[in-house]
Amino acid sequence: MTLARVGVGIDIEERHRFEGLFEGDHPFLRRFYTDEEIRIASSIGDRAAWLSGRYCAKEAISKAIMELGDKSPDFRDIEIRSREDGCPLACVIGSEREYMINISISHSDENVVAISMVRKID
Image (cartoon, rainbow, N blue to C red; front, side, top):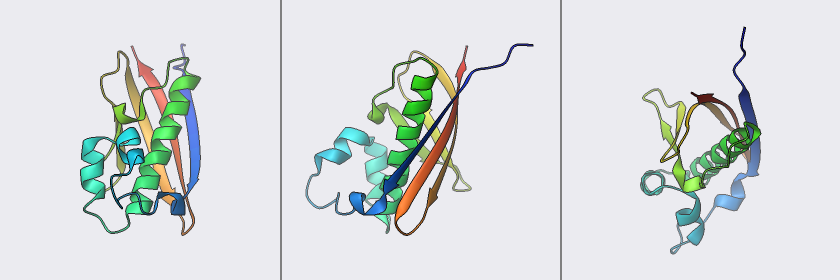
């Protein structure tokens, strides 16, 4: 029996660090988020929670991919979407490899945490 290698990543961030990113043209947004993620974030109420959750998920995915021996994709090439039921869904855009990615994001009043499990698809 051959077992598939799984990379696991986790990240935690303080929500307050993501407050005020929409005041002016903050370079952090363009560096770490896709145009679609920025568009969605601009239309929701608790932007700090949303942005910090997506950032944590991207960081967790990056760590999991590196654990598998691959180079981390640019954060703008990792897009976190939402399924119809609200659960997060991730994809890596423009990668030479395909990955199966499972993520979970959780928030408290002060912090946000995300965990990912990533498998290479051969």
